[in-house]
Image 1: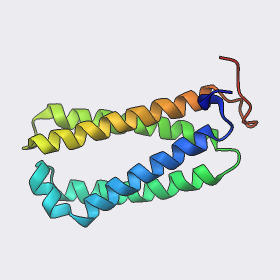
Image 2: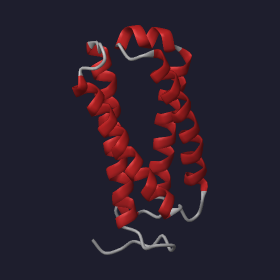
Image 3: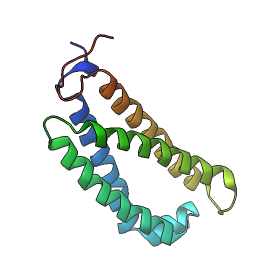
Image 4: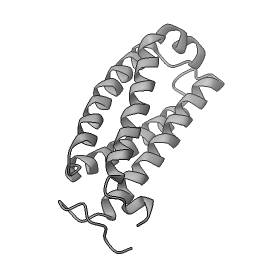
Amino acid sequence: MSLFTAPRFLSRILWLDAASCLATGALQLAITPTLASWTGLPAPLLTGTGVFLVVYALLAAWMARQDPTPRGLTGLVVVGNFAWALGCIALMLSQALPLTGLGLAWLGLQAVVVVVLAELQWTGLRRTRPGRGQPQPA
């Protein structure tokens, strides 16, 4: 059995997603003015996305605790993660905001992390049978 077909693979990736979102959201909320000045991102954007990330982290943690992992919701998470990455990239390319080097790095890191998480979640969905958590042949 490979890591990708382990029965709790999706759950573990959702826990990782929840932890990363909670850490990012909490940081954005805790030091909004400082982060805004360091990154060039508007404080209201950091606050709004910070709240979203904390709420999302709670949902992802709830999903990770379910047995079996809710496949439909996980599919929505995959789409949402790819959309988040596209949003980060769009902000980086738009030149609509006075982003600093740290702001570009902040957005770029988020884009990379959520694409990796989305790909791992998608891999987990493809490798398990619906409703049974059984590995599918590769």
